[in-house]
Picture (cartoon, rainbow, N blue to C red):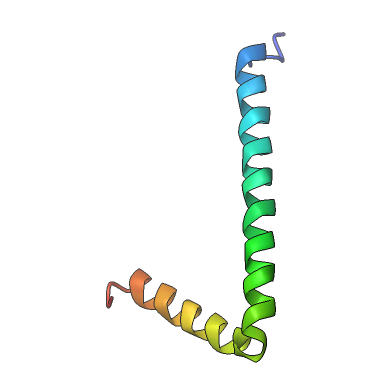
Length: 62
């Protein structure tokens, strides 16, 4: 019974990718927090615009 089929190198690469993703999310969260503070009351409108653009792109209407 061989339960561990992942090499150590592969596992380290997975952990490294997860750390990079975490750091990118932290940076994006900080930038969006700053943008949110600057935009203030326009945040809901911006959210609706982004949702509409994504839906239009998914439906190939954009």
